[in-house]
Image 1: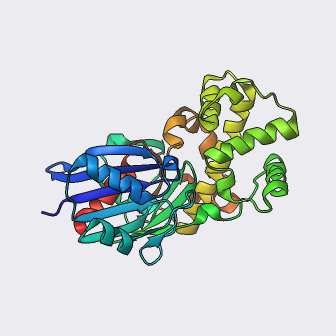
Image 2: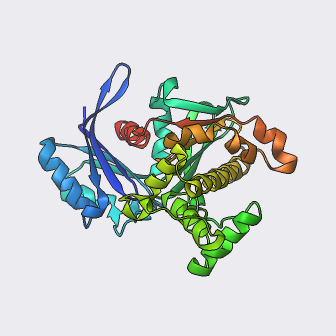
Length: 323
């Protein structure tokens, strides 16, 4: 059996692992996480991993946050360029596949046990219905899985870079605030870690909300905003997270409608698992179904959060094993 390498390249980190198979599914060995911003290119990280793992790999599959076209991808939030041919030639792989990170997540769903999902809306699942995936973290990834006689047929989307559509007056002001700075407002500019910081800044600059001294001391501002919001220690952080949840729910509903995802919507990424208490308060679903003529349809769509952080890596592993 080929020795398989699985990888997941997000906008901030690189995860690599050796893949082994066992009766109850895929196992990831020597799983290592690197801070992507400490390296000038992916090859430097891979070279370091191979040296430390002392393993010889013949097959690799990498899930990458960005559009993969002709086995080439430039990660959306990193100044890198990856091509399968270059990696194959430099490191001696027999086979290599580059896939979008959310597509990798789609392939990883089949590797998860039921307790790896948190249900927000049980709904009525159509076993033959399409499935949607949305994942907010460093960026915003989206993908869909077409229903076809039980096969997994995921296809990527760059929907996170579509125009943001305000849902109320406050969000219209938020759009204007960001438009004056950016010249265009993508959904990712609001539904992401960076987006959460943008929302917080908007509340401070345009609504006179208090900016706590804790923000300047934080190494990771978005993570600290979430922490302060969940603890209820900062009113501005609470309000920012509420707006974030509303906008996340709205974009999730847009994806559900465009894909007719009667098989359900899965929410992945680094943010959602950490804010389950907020998502489950009803706020998310109230905004999700707020669609006039489509409210009944949306209320019946199952919505769940993926709480297994390694899902993209497991998906890349699954694809690698099929090569």
